[in-house]
Length: 541
Image (cartoon, rainbow, N blue to C red; front, top):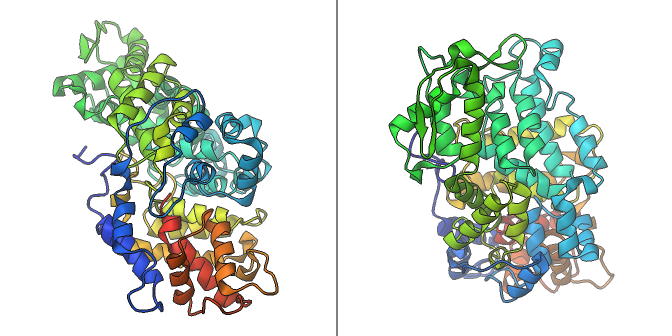
């Protein structure tokens, strides 16, 4: 493993500073505006880009609604105080009008309760979308029976099925948590694990996403996809492979700052030796004759490890120890805090969430629940940036694409577009998972790719999505001005009313006049819609 980790692992990607990138968006949106007028001024852009560092440590409350009330002064230079809008920007990939209505009807606490218990939410459309890809999550025996050897069919079905769920599922918080832990216990798709990785996503990540991390970790360390991805399937007592033993410590559990040594890495690998699988059937088994025996010592875990026949049980005990280690608790807490709060969550928040993790038996659901009951979450307005996948899925959801039937090729088109941007579900090649901070995704070329996708979506270039004509995004009155129409579309797509100077910049950027009658043709209306999606009001959340 290199010195990169899941928060900085894209250091080699081309990028520019967050300040320049956000200002660049504002400047682009101001094209055609009066001289000196930008959608987002330089000071605003700088403030938005550094918002994460301005989030003050908070505290825990009895309910999410109480925490939201405690952070009632939370706002940014772009976003006013609006707890419902803030929650929908973070707890969904992008809010549909139905999400807005459901949250208004149920209230914050009940809406979150249902999202944290996703079986309470009927998800017919999400299930239908995933069913477009019958090999999504398929067992090895099914893949071996239905595809050619080494075929990518099942892996692509699994990744594109994940994209379909993200776009159409009403169980949005669950899908986000799945994404977090698919990066925490990462196996790349597509990859060499052609017939085992699809079931890894279904049986390890999705099965335990709102369960306990202990159960997820043990399942991962017995799954053929993980064993093959990190070479443990060939690890024998005569030639122990250290890859999985090292990444288990560095990436999956305690992290590099926990104080383990190279000798402990060796012990970690020795404990896991003998875990392998049948390459013909894709089934896991433990091979006692391959298991290294002898005393092992990793951090506070020690064992005589004297019998080859007890090797699997020793490994399970070791994994349970690591799952409950305080350093693992902080690592899991920080990953969730980064996803939902800011690129740089406070140590105080991380420690509070880690305490919940440890006192609730490594429950992921309990930690996510506690996160929303922190004032830190509600204070971090506009402090996160959408990554390429989140931008594309969020735009499609915000545009409220409806059609599911016959969508396979269209979803495939979005997938390959995101592949060019370097951000498909499960697609990161190294074992550390995708970076989850803004600095990794701010390349100028990547931003232009986002803008091009927005135009494809808004103008219906992929019509099977159930395209809504731009002129029909909001209802209009006979006397509606361009300014009033733009404000209504902004509320519809962004969930917020932008500042007047920013609305004016969008209108001028579209080549229109503020006081003129609202545009009626799709080309002009589409210009306004796409510029709004390009803006920091959509790119930040």
